[in-house]
Figure 1 (cartoon, rainbow, N blue to C red):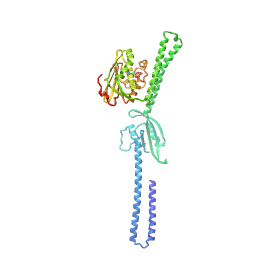
Figure 2: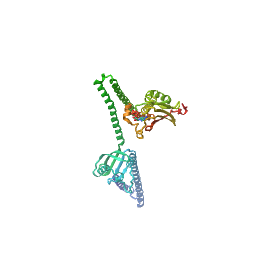
Figure 3: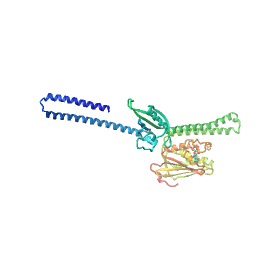
Figure 4: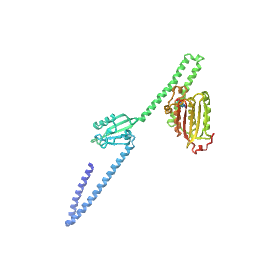
Length: 423
Ligand code: ADP
C-alpha cells in the first residue's frame, strides 16, 4: 500500500511538472494565442495526460489483483493438497484459516454465527496451551497429542507464531498436525514381530541345549535314551530350519523380491500332485483326502507358488483335523476368476481367531501348533502370495465342525474355464 501511495504522489508531481513545462513552451511558441484557443489546447493536453495516467494505473491495478489472486489460488491448492492438518489463528484467537484435512481430523459440528474459535474445534489442553504460548509469548512448540477422532489417533503438533516479513507485526499463529498413527502401528507390528521371533528361536534352542547337555553328561552311552534324545534335538533343529526358511520367504515377498511367472495351471493335476505328497501324513492322521474339481479347469498363477499356497492349506487342514475326518479341495469358475476351497472337518476356530490367523505368528492354540512343528508364518505367507497374484483369500469356520479357506485367483485370459466338463 505504501508503495502504491508513493507512486501516485510521484505521478501527481510529474503531471504538475509536465503542466508547468507545457505552459512555458506554449507561451514561448505561441505568444499571441487567444485566451479561448489557449484554454481549448490546455483542456486537450490535460485530458490526454489524465487519460494516459489513468490507463497506466488501471493496468497496474489489474496486474496486482491478478498476482494476488494467483497467490491465493496457490495457497488454497497447497492447503487442500496437504496431508497435514493446518490451522491458522488471528492474533485475537479467532480462526483465520484451516484446511480440509484439519476438518477431517476434528470433524467439529459447531458453526457459530460469529467468528469460529479454537474452542469450537477442540478442547485438547495441549493444543490450547501451545496456541496461547504462540499468540501471547511468541513461543513455538512441538507436542505429541492423542485424539479421539473418533478412533484413537496420534499426532505430532507443531505450533508457531506468525509475524510479517521483517518480524514487526504479529499476524497470529499457525498449527500443523501430522498423523503418526500409521507409523506407530508399523512400529508396534515390527516390535511384536521381533518379540515373537526371539521367542520362536529361544524355545527350540533351549530344548536343543538341554538335550545336548544331557547327552554329554552321560546319556550318550545310555542305549535306551541316546537315540530318542538325538531325535528330539533333530526335531527342534528342523523346526528352526523351517522358521528360517519361512522368514526368508516372507521378507522376500514383502520387499517385492518374488517374481511370479504366471501361466495357465490345470487345477486337477496340481491338486493330485499335492495330495500324493500329503497322503502319508493324511493316513497317519486318519484323514481322507477328497477332490472335486471340474476337468480342465484352469487358473492363471505361478505353478510353484500356487502349489506352495495349496500345500500349506492342505497341510493345516490335515494337522487341525480329527481322526476319521476329511479334507476336501473343490474349485469352480466365478466370473472371470476361479474360486478354490480347502475344507476340513477339524477343530475349527472362533470368529475372533478367523480375523487374525493371517497375522504373522498368530496361533489359536500355541502349544498344539508348535508341537506340530508349525512356524506360525504359513498363513501370512499364503495371504501375501495370494495378494501378489491379484487374488484374495478368506476363511469361514465353526469350532469343532471345521474350516473352509477360499481363495479367488484370476482365470485364464481367454476364459478357457467356461469350456470345462464335469470330472
Ligand atoms: P502354523 O505354522 O501354526 O500352522 P499357520 O500360519 O499356518 O501357522 O496357521 C496359523 C494358525 O491358524 C494355526 O496355528 C492354527 O491355530 C490356525 N489354523 C490354520 N489352519 C487351520 C485349520 N484348517 N483349522 C483350524 N485352525 C487352523
